[in-house]
Image 1: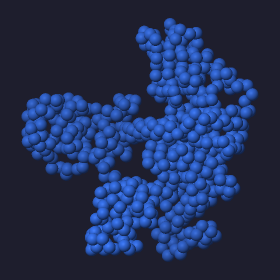
Image 2: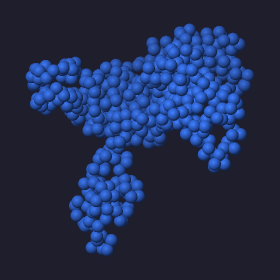
Image 3: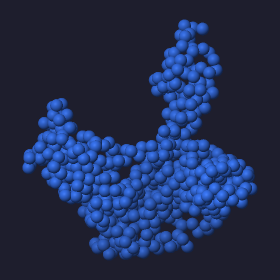
Image 4: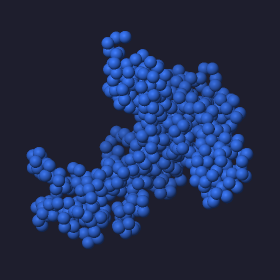
Length: 611
């Protein structure tokens, strides 16, 4: 044995001594030659950290360390770390500081009173965020003005930065009404609290209201004193909803960029699928199973039951329509169960025919090839796919079977031991078949029983379809990206896209024009027309406009390629160029002429195509 391998050292996980011996219970780090571990300690750490956080405890090496540990028999689960999965683990960070710490607070309603967009709005210290002041108490004229608490101001003064910072700051508390003396010490009324996170700063900021098109007067709908509590406030609920929608949009943009990276795998070799729109599932299944089909080939769709194809139809339009029909069929198929948020069902015949794998593969291909996202996954199904079924706790809402749900409710809401035992006696056969039967000696035992039934019915019962579905989703690397970016993919797999709006369409199209004058005038007509469509003053919908230009009535998760554009030209009527995703619009003298031509052309074109 070499000199390095003699003696003992500290296991950096449990801190107990570990002998440097070539034994099964002892493992050596491949990256840090002086680091030795107990096998049991490493296994515990791997189970807790998961594949994303399991690494050498000395040098943080991940790739080399994991490769060696896998070779030595350490099991590393493909899920997030246990501390990331703990519910409400970071709840304390959501506390946002709302208190006036000026020595003589001028607000008659108290130091905790906060009314946005008024002089009684609370402004937090721009440096630490854990001290606050009413705007009026520090003579601040607007919320945008900078303000520092006395502690931070003294630190800045000692560091020599305050004099320079003061030139840029607009705060005048030290110059007006002797307000400097008001900041000599913090108020003893409330102890110092955590500054919270930037996310909560956004939740409390009234400026977000304008960014999300909320009415600037909407805060007058309820007393300001009630708005301090976020859970009870209609304004805060609106802000939270708006912020959530904004967050979803950001996540979808992230998914769009990820899918574009995955699309690099798609080559120019073409695979044509002959699809019968009246039998979308069987024809799609036949196409996906044909010998020359490859997810990395460019897909072309030929609808065999469409005898009179429109000349304006393109392969992209046919592909969009195909994937849209396919996702709609999957949502309503026997492979899934539930109302809007769906879980996998147990279809024995589908398991035998490997249909769950094909469904997963179709969803993956749809995402990368420009089709719609499903949008109907339940949170439980998504978490099972991303974190593994062993780390998911299902809820009663996940049970689609009415009889099973009723049984669980009777057990869950039993208010006495006798009624609980009677219920268990009545459903003995069901519990025994599910392997959930257990002796009940106290009323509190019902909670464990309910949990056992939920895990069996929602997860263990469909473990085979789930694994097959997971394998299908690995196509083109979708599942791997889901596990790396769970929040982003949740936005497209668990949520339906928001209805198209004037703002969405306006952001989607970029305007090009040969004349700046015509561009300005045409842009005004275009924006005015979008407003008419949104307010219902047009016979055309946003979906019609999108279909007219791109051949798709939805915005794919991966976006359009090429990106939609608008050109203002000297033409008589609008033209939708689906090959270039370009909307060519006529230059008109009046808005009414513009609107009439838009509606006549779009409505007639789509009517002819549908016929």
